[in-house]
Length: 38
Image (tube, rainbow, N blue to C red; front, side, top):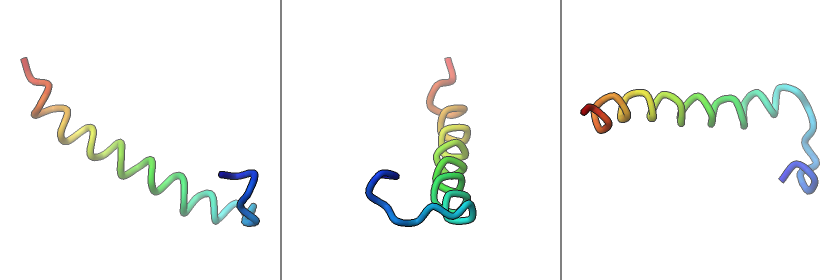
């Protein structure tokens, strides 16, 4: 993706990648604690 995207500003990466990773990590932490309870 980064090879074809013309945006290379640091704030774009912060907004796009870090926010997406934070959402996935938060969802995994919330759902994992409930679904993976033995």
